[in-house]
Image (cartoon, rainbow, N blue to C red):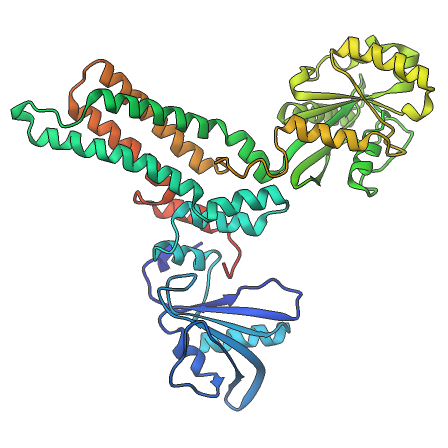
Length: 468
């Protein structure tokens, strides 16, 4: 994204709606939005009432293009904080491209990705954290993602950080006042009160930092790796969970040689289910690479599903499976043990085998038949429980989902520790003030209230779609 236009006053235009519908929405923003429109819109109007829709015709040089509905938003009460016009036209690619070309001919320029939201930030309509949330709302694939993004868009994170900022700012101001009266040896800031406040804020920032893993999983999808020996039914399980034939299923060992990742929404929570290569000792270099990647997926996953073939365990014994899976994360906290193909066993055999597996893995296995779909509902409930995320349980929480926010909070936490150490050591007030200012700046980086460099703005808004 070219940021040379950060301070320009040009009027921009772009398609703001997705392609493929019957109606398209073209957005025009800037001081010349209405003058540009009026060159190609009829009937001519001497005045426009904000937030009213007007029916008319788009034409130029005698050529009628389309019948449209135009809505005018007057600055500063618009998405961008500027005069803004939204044109609803038929979604024909020819109509859309011609209308945009005519607007450019009348003095607009094509908008860059994210430029409308960037202008809303620069014009004070929303802070930087809220602006970032616009992209997250658009990208949401589950109820939990949408809920989290909407909270940030509506200022929940910004309000909490603003409260922490204001409390520290009051003390920082008193300390700076002491510097002005340094020769008189007076204290305006209660040191014990400052210590208590800094400790409380440090704890809260620590909680926010600690929420990043859960927040990232909610935003990107919780990674779940399906692991096990060849032919245990990993691909069949993936297909059963998805309700479609996504992975190739074969009786030939080593069919899956690379990871296959698919998304699955369970009760409003997005999971990323990863089918991996079967784990075994092999001389095949391609299969070895697949196994290496499977182990890496297990390491990166929030939860691993250890899939066992009930017939194989019955025949070879559970210790054989344990030996084959020795390199996997077998801690009960980050895995579930699944006993597949139970449809091939009698009730007595299932119970005996489940008890044997439970003792060996120190965890009660989930009994399932991926082929018949038995046990899938129980598995989905356990995935939700293990993830620690239930439908609707993020309503009251503030979760960090953005790495930029995480780094800023870590910076703030570092300087807060220095403040507390300085208070304990009775260090000079000017050093305490300096670190408090660093804390305030770090918190301000998240919302954009601290001066934000162009390279940061580029990184944020370049990932937006055109028209937002």
